[in-house]
Image (cartoon, helix red, strand yellow):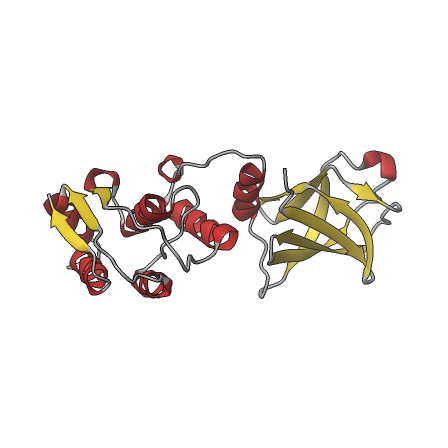
Length: 233
């Protein structure tokens, strides 16, 4: 199995260790940090500042931490308190890392099991990082969208990504990124049909969100520009 996650630990610019995974918890104003499968070349002294870089394929996120107690080589499995400083350009996201870790072990994450809209949107961003924007698609004769599965605009993009590209598929998170994804596809001879079941209920449900009136029709028009045939059921 290919390991797509690498965590580097640096002190004063020098690489001093690696880990396979970490958990950064925040309780009130305090942070605690725990590494997994960590290898360090030396102990880390109290008040030392370390830089942590998390690489997922070509994606980077990270943060800096001041260690509030000495970390000995035989204490690496413990959770320890830290002060954190975050890199706005490559901001660390624990949810991203958790999803990537599951994928890295072959686990399938079902978008409709996630608890909130924010988590589902983050899930889609993970899909974009992991699989990228597709430039080609092996067109099927028929695509089926079940409107009953969609309760929020972000759910629509979860369904579109899954229906058209399968597990970890990405088809945008809003109208602009959707159009960008659609425009990247090489669609020469397109005779595909998209069937949208429970269309009227879905259209009404999405239109109830502020700023989304007629949203489903806009999506349909973009598909039609790309020569998809839409059947509303």
